[in-house]
Image 1 (cartoon, rainbow, N blue to C red):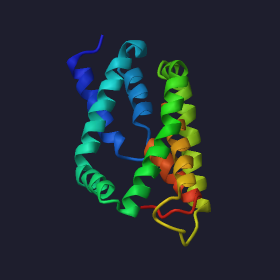
Image 2: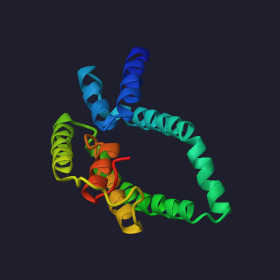
Image 3: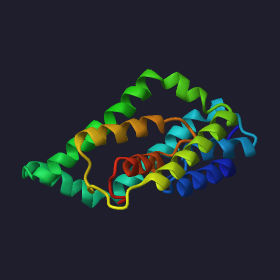
Length: 179
């Protein structure tokens, strides 16, 4: 049973880990294990803290989102390209989430797959840093690169794989500017 104290601890853990290139979902699984909580009972809680994070991200990037939508209405080519890049980059994660929902939820049940995913993610980060180009080709990805970054986000649905970190590392492999 999830106590108020457990919920506060896990909420803080989620809040801290979400904005670093580490897996907040993976850390929630590990936190739940350390607190002796049963993972199947906590799937709804995990979704809730991720929705709360989504609202925080929307709030933080509200001006960029407003600028994006203003640019769409003004037919600004850069904003239109950014919008389509974001839209296309979202498709792989949506497809994977709907088609592999049960398999992904199953990885929330034990720590071994999460630890393995964290190890693989760390190795992917190291490889991206090692092979990154000294002079990036651009800040803005092409639509094909946006889709490839979307594939990295789809893989990041697995707890233990960082969404921000995998997209950053994939961007480095694609010769994009770190920013």
